[in-house]
Length: 168
Image (tube, rainbow, N blue to C red; front, top):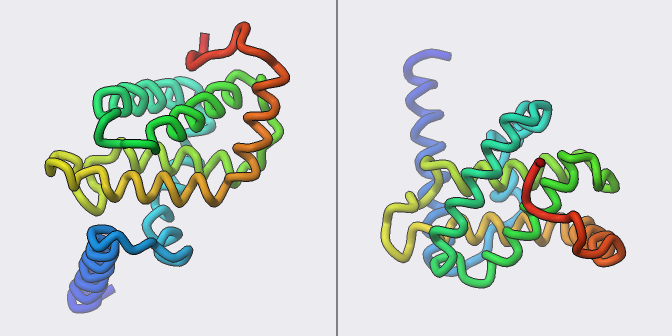
């Protein structure tokens, strides 16, 4: 790529993320293509992370800590995020494997986006900082809703004993 092409690509990317941010701030929803564009780089990272139990554990710990610290800002998405954490732990421990790899990658890409300081609206911006996170989490949950329903059913049949958010 030439310097001009690099500049044009970077400008197009900035304009794209500005458009996404504007839609989120205006409380419009992302369409599937926009969501996929935002999540593409996180999915690539997620594919590598899910191969390493230590990295998964560190990622989940960081995400759970951030979620707990910002529970009020996350609103109703907080509970849904907890379900993603539970499913992730059950999958990593080998307790729950009835989920497509693409859904696992979507979950971990979403968690990566959530903890990333480089998202559409930086989290340090009071009140607005989590709007994009909530939007991306909501979109991911809708995308894998059937898998989440199956997990909830599995969890109910398994019972509460021995189940939790830990890799121990």
